[in-house]
Image (cartoon, rainbow, N blue to C red; front, side, top):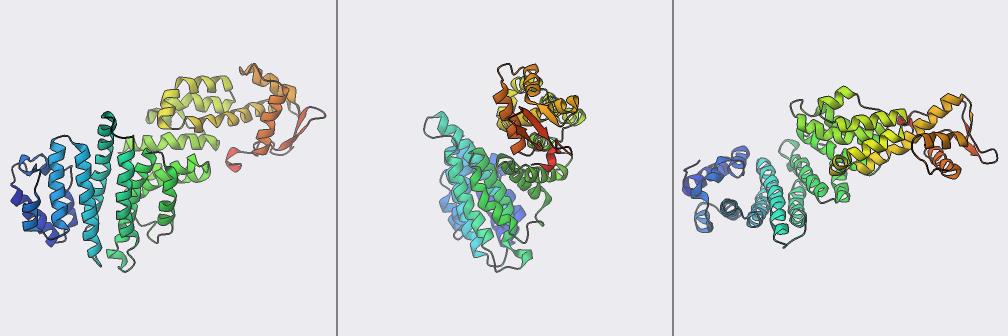
Length: 399
């Protein structure tokens, strides 16, 4: 591949198209394949040669791909993105012409991935030159990829084995990566609905399902749907290949806060195994109701939590910490009629020095409203009256 002529390369591509060999063609159009380092294929205007080999839309596709190789060789990712857009749009036309066949799906996966990666690099270059906003090119790439999704989702004629619907999840996962990168999670909703209503929803490849459920779990977490988030992220973690330690760690970064909000604290051994000891002091503080320790742990690891996008989710653990602190007061006093003054003392012991009776009452009222304490406040007697049975319900039964 390193010294192959343009004609030899185009002959290989032509052979793979005629043989309907999607895997080989995907390699020949991939920017992770050795041919992109071939100086003989770095041609600015290859249209004439491509027209001699192919009919439309394949001639446009190959000309755009070869020009894209030239652009990448010149480190011009804005031009590379433009060329790759033509590649994807030409492939969509080709796939639409394949009435009852899906052999080109591997090609679509490859060119869609490269489109997203070029969009990322193009955004960096444009922002650096002051010619664009962060995420602008990525958002345009998402519009192009939606064309791929529509081609797959609208295929209702084919038998299941040759259905283009098998390509839906791969493209949805690419779109998820874009929408999370540009912080437009709401755009995931119609895609989730499309996958969940598909009769293939449980039959996609394990790798694609892990990615899909990872992103749906993250979205559920941000939407405050913690039980659903736990279900999806747990699936992603359990089914992620054991050798993909980096991916398992990424999943845990979002699964751990969800688990803690549901009352399940991680073991130190798990945190050590996945190099996530940033959560150790947080988990210990929440489980022991130690507000001082929680605030200290959040401050020490603030940069890491913000970078991961979970700082505000972890802030929700404060109410769990209040609940666990107040449960200690309940166990210590051993009565179902608890003076509100006792909670003020407990809070001041934990460094909340400016708290008064009204603020303590407000925290207790919130805990009652959220179902984390079963009881009511007797304002006449300034007491919290809790249920004699299960006054502090398990968190997993509340959320």
